[in-house]
Image (cartoon, rainbow, N blue to C red; front, side, top):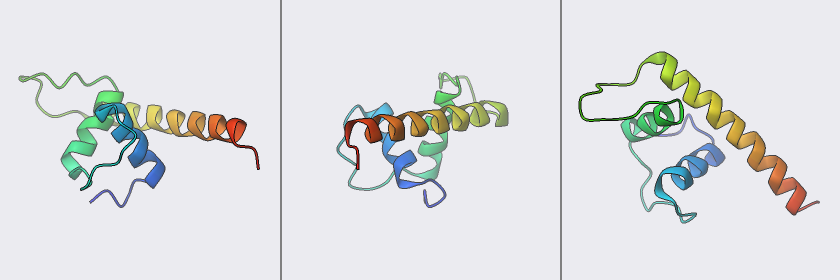
Amino acid sequence: MLSHLSSMRHSLIELRYLGSPVPLAQPPSLGEAVLWIAQLGGFLARAGDGVPGVKTIWRGFSRLTDLVKMWRLLNAALHPI
């Protein structure tokens, strides 16, 4: 279901919310992934909060993009070709 996310984004989201670099046996559902991205954008996911809005999801994607860029920079610095 997460075919729209790159494998790196998928891995970073799992690492952020599961706290383990070991990938899940089964990828999260689309709803779980959107919730995790929204939480990166500031969504608190409390019981009465409802669903995240477009702006919160956009902020989450923006932050996720920054995380991917940082991951690539750090990885390149630690493992030069």
